[in-house]
Length: 242
Image (cartoon, one colour):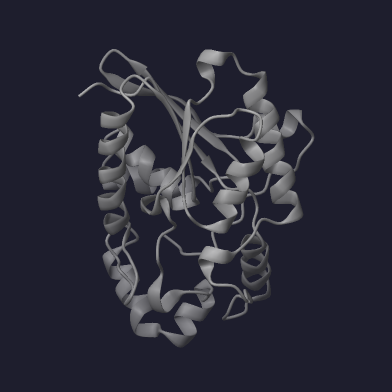
């Protein structure tokens, strides 16, 4: 199977959920105040500015460095990011539910303190199993998310041989795509997770070198600084420790 020529992944811009999650964690609250379901959380005003800055960055790139097709999570914040970032590129945009954020089940809308206070048995089980394998009741583990991402990447390689594909997704998706593309171990991935919070509207890129994709950018936000837009690093809806 022919490898892609270029694969990029863009995390969505700052969302109202990111802002609410940060406020709840800072205040030591148990529950994050988000009225919408996760799939319907919109971008904040800053998030919209970030997405527009990404769009200007794409236009400034050489044609061979621009994506030819975008595959986007169905969640509102990712679709809004794609709409704003890709408006001038005139490329096909495909919505694919395999890029949706990790489903948290009973942990949905709970802060780190909230899990400890309200679901102490789950907090203990999570610490014992670790972030990679822990599956909250009604939710997904990172391994579960990897299964759908493996399927997606297989289809992209088949449908776009030697093509340039941009994914638009969520924080966990960025990290797990890196895990797959670079054939990382669980320990290597966790080392990255401990030292990295994936920034809103950051870009990570891999480019084909022979038969494999080589990393070129990771968690890159220089395009935001150049355009004078704030860089934000709030975690997605629920702050979960490693």
